[in-house]
Image (cartoon, rainbow, N blue to C red; front, side):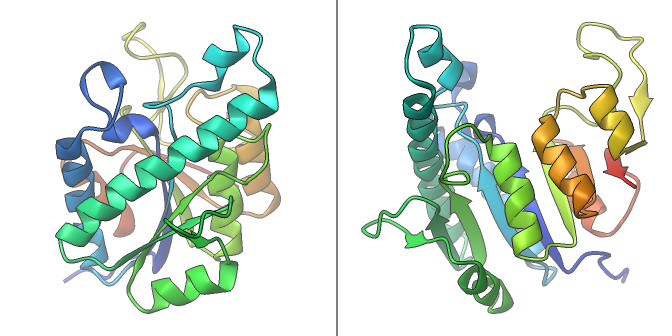
Length: 238
């Protein structure tokens, strides 16, 4: 049996991964589907931490377009990520996977505070750690939170799971002739302003030599292929 290439991964999921019809809300069936994919990888004895977005519940730009204060809009988004984290925790626990939710914003009634060493210890004990609340600070995206947490927990790779199978020169849904990249350097990803991850997150990964793998979570076995180091998606690295 092949040996997994990575021992510890940070998986970044957009809120849309849990969304209902039209990309809005939390669909328990979608949460169960995501949990099942995570379980397959966890059963390979791979340590997993997750960072979730909140686009299915709140988009700060909608508030900004009505004159909302940026910090307020961002804090609302951070709270929404915790709702997603709890939904995914429930789905994972029902599959028999021990899970802990940690948050950058203290809310002890529903989650642990994010503590780096505690998160690492949970993973070493076989628990999946879901990290909510972004970075705890406004003006930073959940992509940047994922990059930061990946470094802090010493993940082997940051996997950005999307609904697109790789990074393209243009949106392949709009231009079928768009070029698909199997590999990109950090600099090329920044220069081309790839839409799958913001520039702050990519720069942080570049400065700390954290590889990024962009893949389609919904392609059969894509996450398994990724942890075994098989060709899937796009690698962004040195």
